[in-house]
Length: 127
Image (cartoon, rainbow, N blue to C red):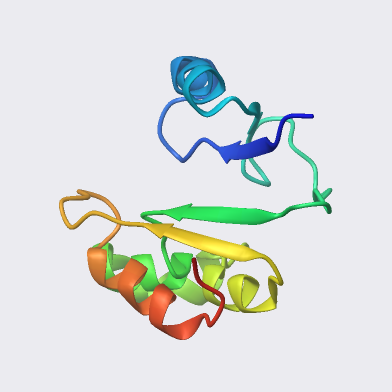
């Protein structure tokens, strides 16, 4: 029985453009790959996948509010009104009882590297 990787594909592009990534993971890691949209994108629902052995955070933001603070300063006066979904990775990650692998690079043009470092520092479960 192969392990399964749940791959949330990110905010740029769509699942179709991530198929080559899934094929490569399948072939090189000998694992099933489930491509998933983030909640609220496309036809996705609020259902959660329960039986996880671990999770990988790849250049993950702390929250949408932190992204506004870092990259969209002109939206600060409207933040409370505009941000319906907080995407609070820090509080979510703190509730996880699985192994977490953090993958980060300091050349990400969208998510500041400091957010990933802060997320890592604030959440105790690590690989």
